[in-house]
Structures are given as C-alpha cells and as structure tokens.
Image (cartoon, rainbow, N blue to C red; front, side):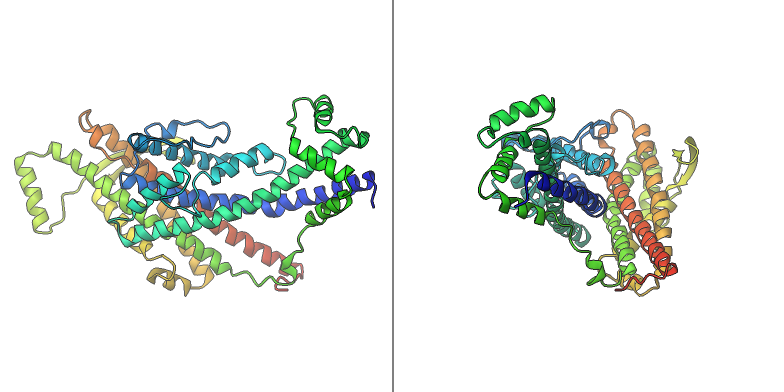
Length: 463
C-alpha cells in the first residue's frame, strides 16, 4: 500500500497529465460540439419565429451578458405561454451565442461552477427526449411548438428541423461526456488540495467533515468547499477500502492511448469540405425567408407612392409577365477594412434575381442531393475553390441584406413600422452558418498543411 505522500505525488502527476490532455484533446472537441449545438438551435429558433410560434424580442440585440445564466425554467400558465416562450428562448439563444463566441475554453477557467452552468444550459431543453408529455415545462412546450412548426412547410424547412434535432441530440451527449471528464478532473484537484492543506495533518479521529471545512476555510479563505468531496477524501484516506478507491482513481486518470497510431484511418479531407458545403446548403431556407420579407417591405413602400394609373400599369405588367420597373435604393454600410460608412446604389430587381438563383443552388446541397453529388465528384481543389467563392458571395449578400433591413426600417413611416418585416434573426442565423462554413474551410487547410509538414519531415500519417 502506497503511503499518503506517494499517493499525493502520483495523483499530482496524473492530474498534470490529465490537464494537458483535456486542454489539447477534449476542450477543442467541447467547443466544436457546442458550436454545432448553438448553430442547430439557432436554425430552429428562426423557424419558430417565422411560423409565429414565438415573438421576436425587440431588445435581443441589446442584451449584455457578463456570465452564463440559465434562463428561467419554471412552469407557466397557458395564458403566459407565448410571452414566456418568446422571452426564454430569446435569452437562451443569446446565452448560447455568448458561450460559443465569448467564453474561454481553458481547463482552469472552466471550473466546477462554470461546468454546472454549461450543463444546465445544454440540459435546459431535453433534445434527446423531446416529447409533449415531458416532466420539464420547457421541454414540453418546445416539443409542442416543434410539432406545430412542421405543419405546412416545404421540404427544405422540414429537413432543416429534422437535421437540427438530430444534431442537438447528438451534441448533447458529446458535450455532457466532455463536461464529465472536466468535472472529474476538478473534483480530484479539489480533493488533492484538501489533502495538501488539511487532511494530511489529521489523524483518523480528527477526519470529520465539519473540522475539515473549518480548517480549509482558514487555509483557503473565500474558496468554495464541497462537503461530498471531503467525505470522499475521508473514505479514501482513512477507511479499509481506501487503497482500492485510490487505485481506481489513478487508473481512471490514465490518458487514453492515441488510437491514431493503430486504428486511425487516413483523414478524408474531402469530407471536411463537404460538411462545409452542407452548412452552405442550410442557408437556402434562411435566404428564402429573407427574400419573402424584403419583397413585402419593398411593396409596402412602393404602394404608398403609386397613383392609380401606376398601380394599374404594375398590375398589367404582372399579368403579362413583363419585367417590373427597376427599383434602385441608396444603401449605406460599414466598410469592415476601413471602418468607414460606404454608400452604394442597389438595383433591387437584379439583387433579388441573383439571390433567388443562389438560393436554388444551395437548396440542392442536402446530403446526397443533386448539387451535393455533383460537388462531391469534383477534386478537392475544385471544391475548396467553390466553397471560398460561395462564402464570399454569401458574405456580400449578408452585407446587402443588413443594409436593406436598415433601409426599410428607416424609410417606413410611423404607421408603416409595425408592418415592416425585420430580418435580424435570419441575419444572425446566416452569420453563424458563414462562420461554420469558414471554420470547415480553415480546418481543411490546417489538416492539409499538417499532412504536408509531416511528409516533409518524413513522418508517415497513415499508420
């Protein structure tokens, strides 16, 4: 049986190795799964808004978050349903955005308190068991509006819902597994600290939770104390089963063997690019919804300026399938490279035609769809060129859509403002999808560069 000092030394070494493994291997996976989770929920959130199942939060973009907070999950009455769901899901979307885009993913930063917050956020809605008879009021309500969202929608939107639910369920399990590994590390780190500061100086009679709490508070003022973990230390250090418990802990903290040396198959870099293409395909439904809303806004502003004969002429053009008169808008947007405002004239008819073409192309990028299959048959260099080109084009579309959204809101009269359709949720979803597609592109480039570097060093990567 190893004595206390030997165990402390062995546990210290195991924890150092574990922290390094978590930092390099598990935390990147955790962030990636959370990004998938957030992107999938954002797609559902946009559909809920589109179907009128929840209302848009006018203060959503102004919300400032300093630390993760789990939204209210208490029960609500049927009369409160719409307001409560709208407010809570808006808050939930903001919290996920803050987690993915602003949270630090480091072993020390993600302490037990923050792990608990992430756990609560991921389990806020039970996507694994999303059923209308759930015991959770939020899961029950979200299950009900998800069923309603599937009614009367096109096949593309239906596939977005199905794919989002599948990814949310899968990512939930992957995130919880990473959080458990991280929590186990912090629990054993706390227990190690208890040993080095308090319990190693106690005998069996003194090893009581109340005394340990008191001495720990004096040794580490302001630090959280976990009574259940103190009980574990007492059992491991002072009970007959202690040696077996300690051995079990050390075994559990052994770093998993790097399977890449024995079972890893050659990476399919094309699959990384095709995943980016599928992300691009998910943008089609969002672009389609933006087009519908912007057309309504355009017609709303145009109709107020039309006299009788102009309206009659417009009607005849529609009946005869003639091209409508050109509509040119003076838009303003910020130049991201210079940080200065830029004015631009936009031919709305041409823009909408180009956007509809892009929407139809992207709609075929569901897995094994016609456009997907054509793209998959290409060489990797052709696919990445296609991906880069389309990301740039969608970024330009996003910029123009943002400017049009601001333009219509600014041009509307007080009476028209309630009828103007905002596209902020769609813009947010589009932005997240662009980031995700770009991430796939960069991941591909990084993997290829690493492979080339290994080849230059004479290291085989296919063993």
